[in-house]
Image 1: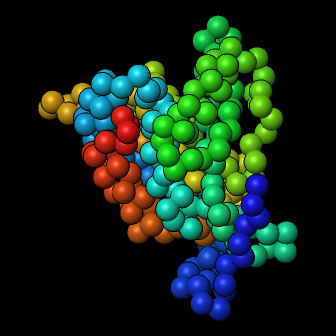
Image 2: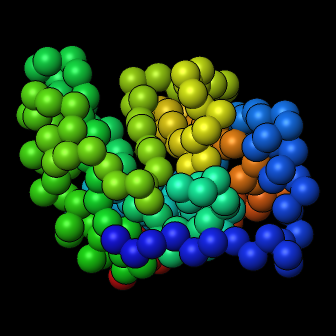
Length: 218
């Protein structure tokens, strides 16, 4: 794992905002959106690739475009950016009604990512421990799925969460409306890392990726 790169505080436009929301008024916020995944679902219907892994890769692809979603704090308390951020995703064990958390290295090539993650997904479905592959690395971010229900709002209450800079994503059950397929997505963000502008850009770029899913079958 590569080391995070310290932020140049002398030239960082968000230095004052970071200091305010990290030290003076620490807070996080949540945004829940519905993404139009009609074309994405149709593309997956022509493919043997797994929906959940495609969802995870799409999120990871956009996360890795932007520094603010790969932020961490060094041992001396300074902000830094991971060169790459890897997803850690939950997998449900239906027999036990528990879930496992599985980390997987991000790959900019969806096919390579899918082929590496698919056997981990299959194995984790029968895992009896929370972290069958060990705890995720410090450069990871969390993705979970609630395929049993849709939602219009979802907020995590995290003890010590005001020191958690990585974004957290929660996927819901598809909704069919007016001939379109919609995917609920909740995003938990630390305000020190990203403002509403940055999170909106992430959502918009994710929507663009899902609306043009040629990568699913590439």
